[in-house]
Length: 83
Image 1 (spheres, rainbow, N blue to C red):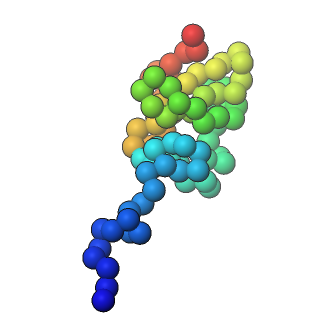
Image 2: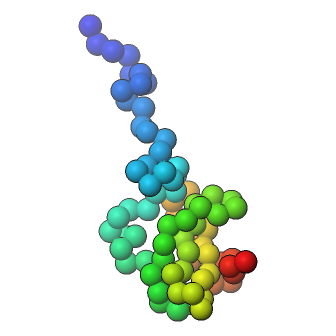
């Protein structure tokens, strides 16, 4: 007898290994090459007020970019400045 589809075995885990929701996940190969568009520094994974974000690691810059449905919005005009 076969198990019906949609059982617990076929459901994806809603959390990734970093604890971010599945929709926020960025492919590893893309994650390696992403840089801050303002200063070209590396970006670090973070969780902001509205969900997952990428934060610039340069203390002088520090811009915070949101991630919408797994797509980083790397627009300087839409980035948040650190508090």
